[in-house]
Image (cartoon, rainbow, N blue to C red):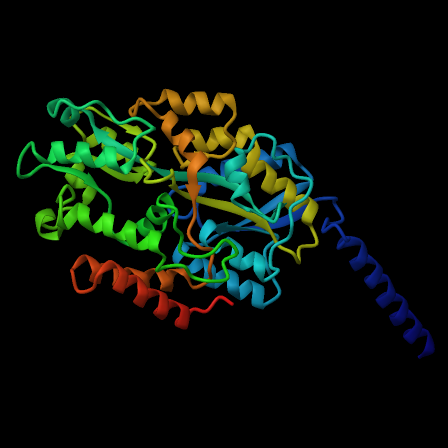
Length: 416
């Protein structure tokens, strides 16, 4: 009996040794291969094959690392991510959009990224995912907003084309002359909603929050003035159509009909306008009021603070973000714009026209602004949007609407 017990003890000890050998501290198995998990949403639906091309290329260059890709639709992604975090099974590498990035960093969920090769990443996009000078995410792709204009309407109105030095005053004067071409012609279109508001107030020297994001500044004088300017474009000069004049038509459709001089919208409109506009059009950096500011939308790869495979995770994140191989795959698939803007990538991107002035896309990166990075920002956007609608409808003055929004949002979503 004693011999049997000894045999069992020795067997158990041997099993523990073997287990220890097969699960080394760097996450590699007994074959020396480290497997990391990568959770993402942006490839869902249309670009999963493109992502796998990147993964395959990475694995071919790093045969000691395998990537277990887990893709979820955007609607389910953050719930799935929250479940993994709560269950202590956070993926080694995962994707975050810029709106949620700071919220996850402030919770200590993501690790500082050190040792990554960022030499080919556009510095402005890189800065977007840095906090206090420390890098917590590596951007993978970006899109932004420019002003797109109908060159034929400018010619018809006898106007010079917009330049990167234009201000809102220049834009308004041109918009008035295009509006004068006929009852069904309009000068410019910008929506009045939260996503446009936070950028416009920055153009006027305002903001939705203070620099440290510890207090709301929604009802500042600069913001009230900016909102009044937005509303006047519709209700006063009427260079922007109201809802009745739109007749249920979308802003892109209005531009494609040839009856809109200028539209401020994303670079993702290029393929549609290229195919469906039967007039000449081009782009320019969006005009500012007192200063330039333009939207910036981006996604980043982050590394889990709890990952035991950080070295492999950072190597993978660096490849997807900053390698010329991944950039070329993304560019060939027309999957937004890669942040690894090498000379070759930039040259290839600029060569595909229209628009002719694609350099404006690159130049706009010098003026990027982002929404407050708050966990409740979606709800905040809805709340503010309802007050903006009331101001547009004349139920409140811009000051009354923003005073109420400041009070309501500060009460419901405190940030102390």
